[in-house]
Image (cartoon, rainbow, N blue to C red; front, side, top):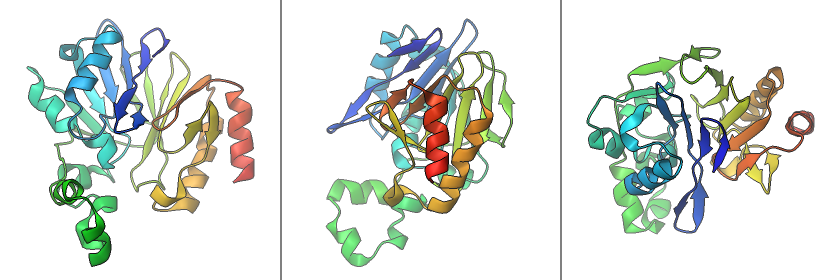
Length: 239
């Protein structure tokens, strides 16, 4: 779904649910924000092509955080490319993405024997051998990347230690990652059962009030464009 010039929200269908990576581009570069679960190389290629951006134009991937449904297809994308693709993530999530530490939420060592044995065999194999990839550049709060009119990093920890959101200056779009979800265009806070530190995650939402935001893309739930400023204020006041 094309949101504005040079910005598309991809819609990737996986086993009954939808993931929404964001694609941004201009004449010089194409940037993908998050990559879905493992095995989505072809759906990503098709979705990018439908937006008018071939996979071979991809210059960088920015990861909002370490969860397996965000980093899953990154190794396939990097392997498929005939040129180097720069990978960005926050420094606090880097060791998990690179594999020097197990992904927090799918670490077999953190699960009870009963919880582990209740998982489908495919999940156990995936959790024991999660995707990993080298991070070329670590990101910090307030940093601005010189792509597509400027991409500003907003450090929004809580969902994971190194969760980030991204503000696209040119289009005034906030890419929220999992800091929020959208339900029929209505913004909601982070999902508690999937959030490591809910108090910190809720405090992180206040940072969004400092930005002139026209639309929000949530990885789960998609786009929210109606009265975004009012929705954000209500969400912060409520939490």
